[in-house]
Image (cartoon, rainbow, N blue to C red; front, side, top):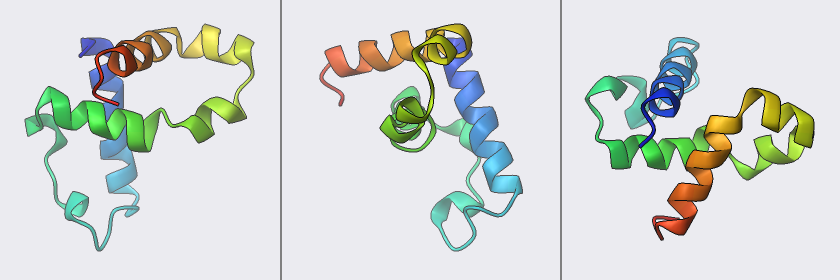
Length: 82
């Protein structure tokens, strides 16, 4: 997994966790820095860089702010992980 995308995904997960959004779920106490690349890739695709987020942004916003995420998403899709 792209290390910059992995780091941003972990940071998003930690921030979301700190705000209590995972209360009542296994992720409430999870140490995301100990997760495997495959686990972080799953969180990236399913929770962070979702179709809903992509749909909410303009193409220009995606290219300007999420170019690495777009590449990683495409790589994961092509790898048959998703």
